[in-house]
Image (cartoon, rainbow, N blue to C red):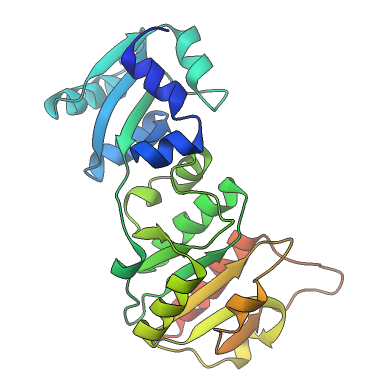
Length: 256
């Protein structure tokens, strides 16, 4: 495992290297295909020997070669040691994910912005981004304590949404400036909120989702014009944060 590309992948297993180099790793056929389709810039691709034996894999390599992407063959063992998944499907890519800043993300009519406050689980963050993209959100803001956008599990759970949905980290102060600029109603999803059916649906919206353990922080709650809740069956404690966001975003979209 001595190549420069292999060493780069090893470094990118650490968040500080991903942040400093502004690079991410995508594993698996589907994710690499999605990155190609989204026009993402690639630094290089590692493939296990024999990967090109299927027509689908051969097409993918042709598309990468047409974009002058460096492609390097490695052993299956090397790829398995570099991959974060048990089944990396013979392909792993280093890419430059789209770079957004918080001030470029804007609420649009019928296109809310999702705000994540301390959602630590990268699988949840990826699913939240995937859900927001699928339901027509305009973008996402990630507050402190939220898994970073280049985390391999975020990218994997996002199923290509991280390549297409405008998303950026933001500090609490930046969020306050953003809310003041956007002048859009802010909803915070909380267990003790007003039942969703009783809250008028705004045309423009920012939806704040907190972690399942701690919820939305008080300082962020203070920005909310409404605190909304999804009524649950007796005995049910809560919903997964991504499921809850999906329900709320769907209800907002259905109202227009």
